[in-house]
Image (cartoon, rainbow, N blue to C red; front, side, top):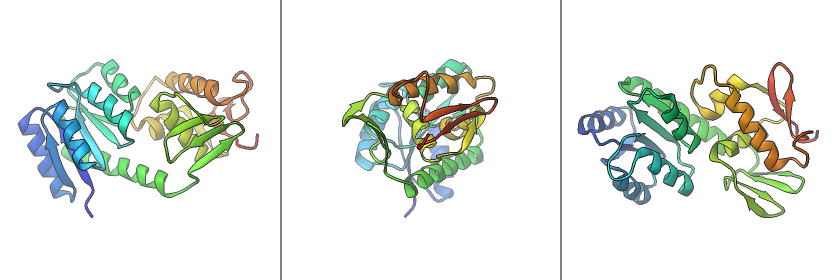
Length: 229
């Protein structure tokens, strides 16, 4: 069956053009013109991916992204006309997986959608559904972290980083590679954000974050998950 895509944009020309192009590429597309309609249509149809404009009436794209991420792990690609890096970072921190800046190439958008769906398929089709780290359980299927059976609150991107690392035990990843694989976009000059997320991650899963057992630093390279450290 064709993958379903929800396209959310308040500009009719953009909405219709994107829908037509993605339909021609073999996707099943439906659309919404504002934030509230987007949530209603998402809940009705449960699409495989959401293309979400940042600037929307009723509810902003940022707020829609926050609500969607609280309800679902659906992949989200933001559309933004803004040049401010902060706006993009806010959306990504709330759980969006990628962004495309207007004006954009329809071919590029389709390629990003396919790449993101491939990553999701690979993540869901291989590896364990849960990883035990002493008193901590990484519930990959449920997209949650448990300590002694109780849920631990994590920012969405922190959990995404954890899920990626535990799915690749023993592999060393540079900060740039982690940005590419976990954040899903180029983030030149901002590799410090990986260090900040690793700091939060260690605080959540390590008994002694200052002397980490599981998420280890490889000096001059990046980070590695060692389950049997």
